[in-house]
Structures are given as structure tokens and as C-alpha cells.
Length: 309
Image 1: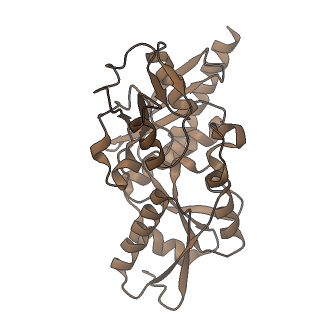
Image 2: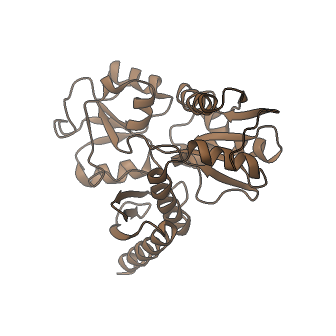
Image 3: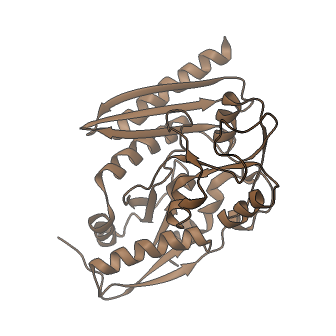
């Protein structure tokens, strides 16, 4: 049965960054277009990740810092649901919370940005490339050990100013955020996801709420869930959960649906970058979590074997 929560105001928790607000307001608008009587109150929450001013987020606890305070607000019922960039959400959620829906996925690829250089391959030896992602850093170092890779922090506009004023020769950012902020024009080109494997959940929004909000869960799933996004996100997130990676672990996982077959690629490097493993596995779309769990087991076995060899 379709549920229309017209009798109350639902509180939507969100970070206050331009990208977070764009994403959350897009979700709210989508819901209100489907139900004009729906009332949603936006609650902006400053997270530890927003307050952190260091270069490497991993040193302070990783991307989980972007959801910590929002999840606390969910658990204390200060907000009813939240919109996250799924790649910021840890593999294991706090008890009492769940991801209720995955809207259609944006472009999952990483994008190359530069003022001076037309492509990644065009970067000269010693060029300064900015990224604070261990996943990107390790994969890029393997492709171009001649580059100088430097940490970069701040929202998208802040980072763009850093290449405009010459602090960096190039940046690598998630394409999804640039697309959602209507900044496709700054992208020089895209990395093939088989070459630079995306982060788990990159390009996906995760709608989080409390497990006991049965009617709200049904409403969110009915109006926001997209099948392909859900299947691929579930496979990737189970891979993440079973890998047990922390913020220091360079880890990537990306799933695609072809027909009714899910294809999942997983990649992991040791924190020192000396060894890495890239494996792929396919399985029926009816069992996305099983695919993610099996691939994680194989990657962990392989990395352990290489570490011990």
C-alpha cells in the first residue's frame, strides 16, 4: 500500500555544503512532486568532516566523519531521514539505522580537471596532482609514478580555485558532484572505471532512516528507489563491509548490471602501496550481497597471499 505522510512534517537531515544541499533538495523536490501534500523541513547539520581543516581526512577518521552527527540526529529523532553521498557512508551502519532507498545513480567515474593540460596523459613529469583519496592516490601512482601527488581539501569550488591559481597542475574529483552542481564544463575528460576504479557507492545517494519507521521506509522506497542503482549499490556495499576496510585502506569497488548479470570489480592495496589486488566476479542480479561477499573473500585471500609471499 502506498503511504502518504501528509499528517506531519518530515525532517530531512543534511550537511550544509553546496553539494550536500543540492543533493538533499533534489530528493525533497522529487518526493514533493510525487506528493504535493508532503511537508519536508530541511535541518542543516554541521559534521566533524565539515569542521576538519587538516589535509588528510583519513588522519582524523575518514569519510565517516561526514555522516556521524547526522546519524546521531537520526537516532535521537531530531531528524527523520537523511540524504548522503553513499561513498561517505561506512560499510556497517549504527544499530537502529538502515539505508531505505537508492535513487538513480549519477556518473560513477572520476574526472580529470586542469587549466593547463588537456588530459591526464598530457601531464609532464613532476606535475602536481591534487587528491586526498588513498584509493585514487595509489591507483594513480601505479599509472604515473612520475607525478607529485599532493593532498587537497575543501568543497568543490575551493578546489577549483586551487587549480585556477596554480597551486596544482591538475585535480581528480568524482564526476557525480560536478554534474550535480552543473560544473561539467570544468571537466577535461573522464577516467575509464576499469582503469581508475571508483569508490564504493560513488555517484549513488543513500537515503538513511530508522529501521522502525516502516511507513516512511515504504514511502521512500516506493518513490525514490531505482532498481539498477539498488542492485549495484548493495553488491558494492557488501564488498565494503566484508573487506572491513578503514579510512587508511586504499579500497575500490564498482558494479555494473548487464542483462540480469551483475559484474563487480574489487581492488585493494596495502597501506604502504607496495602490493595491490584487482579481481572481478559476476553473478545473478538476484543475489547482489552474495556477489559482494564472495569477491571480498577472494580479494582478502589474494592480498594476504601476496603479503606473505
